[in-house]
Length: 333
Figure 1 (cartoon, one colour):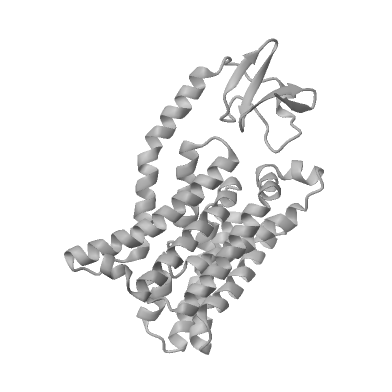
Figure 2 (cartoon, one colour):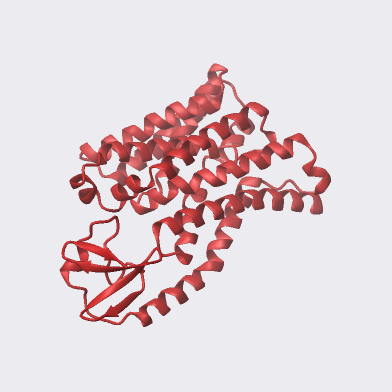
C-alpha cells in the first residue's frame, strides 16, 4: 500500500477523493433540510447528458456536465416553484430525460460504454492533472459558498416564510443551493459516479444527525464523515485489490463504507434521543410563545436540545448557552 501511494495516479485520486468528500455533504445538509435528498440523483442523471455532449464534441466532459447540470438545477427550481408539477414529478422528468439523452448522444458519437461507465460509477485512478485541478476549483467554490452563507441558507431551508419576513431572497438562495448541488454532482462524478453521487451528499448528513443536535454540529460532522468515507473507501478498495488481486471499484466502496458508518451510529442516535426525552421536564406541548424566536431556531419539545426547568419557564441548552423565552425572542444566559 505504501508503495502504491508513491504513484502519481494514486496521489491524484486521494486529492480528488478528499475534496469530493468535503464538498458533497456541505450541499447535502441543505438538501436534507429541504427534504430534497434525491435531488442529487436527478441532477446526476441530467449530468449524463452533459458528459455525452463533451464526449461527442471532443471537449472536456467535466465542464459540459457542469453547464448541463446547472441548467437542469435551474429548471427544476422553476418547475417546483412556479409550475403545476410537484417537485417529485420534476425530479422524475430529469431522471428519465437526462439519462436517455446521454445514452443516445454517446451512441451517436460512437463512444464505448466503458468510457461512459467511468462517469456513471466513478474512476478515481484514471484522473489526470487537469481533472484534479477542476475538481479542486469546483469543490472550493461549493465549500466557500456553502459554509460562508450557512446562516442565510439554513434560514431559507429551515423556514422559508421566516426568512422572507426577515428580508432574505428565498428564491435566490434556493437557486443557489440547486446550482451548488449541480456543481457538486460534477465534482463527484469521477469519484463515486453520477449514479451514486447522491449517497455521498446525503448519507454523511444522515449519519451526523445521529450524533449531533445543532445545525452547525451536523454540518461539521457531515463534512468530516464525508471526507473520511471518501479517502477511506479509496484506500480500502486499493488494499482489497492488492490483497486479493481483484479489480475493486472505488465508487461503490466509498458509498458502502459511508453506509456502514450510518449503520454503526444509528443505535447510538436512538440511545441519545431516548436519554434526552427522559431528561425533559415536561410531557405536554410547549406554549405557543416558545415557538416564536428571534434567531434561526424555534425551540420546542422535539427540537433536540436539552430542556431545563427554570422557575416558571423552561430554558433550552443551545450552542453552549441557555435560551430563555422572553416575549417574542430568546434571552441567552
